Amino acid sequence: EDKVVQSPLSLVVHEGDTVTLNCSYEVTNFRSLLWYKQEKKAPTFLFMLTSSGIEKKSGRLSSILDKKELFSILNITATQTGDSAVYLCAVILSNSGYALNFGKGTSLLVTP
Amino acid sequence: GAVVSQHPSRVICKSGTSVKIECRSLDFQATTMFWYRQFPKQSLMLMATSNEGSKATYEQGVEKDKFLINHASLTLSTLTVTSAHPEDSSFYICSAGDRDYEQYFGPGTRLTVT
Picture 1 (tube, rainbow over the protein chains, first blue to last red):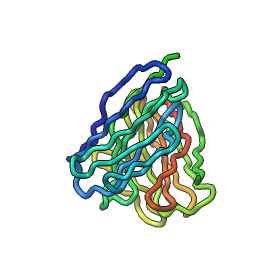
Picture 2 (picture 1 turned 90 degrees about the vertical axis):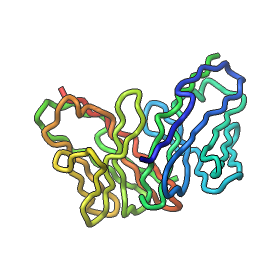
Picture 3 (picture 1 turned 180 degrees about the vertical axis):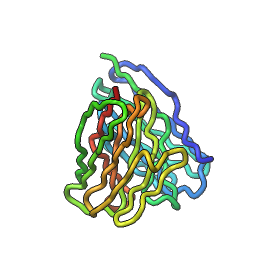
Picture 4 (picture 1 turned 60 degrees about the vertical axis):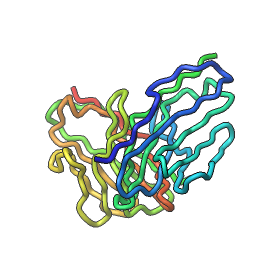
């Protein structure tokens, strides 16, 4: 059975802290791993990672994939209260078209 | 980025009635759309893959006769929850991809069955 596991499930930090969110996967036919941010409504796309070792960066967020150890991390530096959200990791399998297999998410709360 | 819309954003219906949710890709054509369901404090679960011009592919445990999917055009997929029950109350989200497996989600539909 394909599995996507995120940790921690929830996290509370102070503004300015740096956080690292983890996503490990055990799937057959891995194609890509994606990170999403979900606030009140539907998830918004952050990153798609297909190759190992190549860091993707967008502002204070960055992410990297390790296909040997089967995990990815999402880093957020200098956190702000607006970063409070659920961060979802999802895996696309090469035999599933575009369908996403989601982890349970990490709920991040950034306090002032 | 690409835009996907959903309608309605929120619906309340009585037990036993049917509800139709529309998902549209506004600025691109999508031969494949996906329907997800999200219960409170849980992650998104794929329900089915909607294929334009052919039958939808349902995930294990999802009743195809209860959740009817129609993908009549390259920009529209509909999900009809038939004979809704309170346990069908959930957040339903559709998505579509235009290239490189990057998916765009609709804003979601909150269904409450009383």
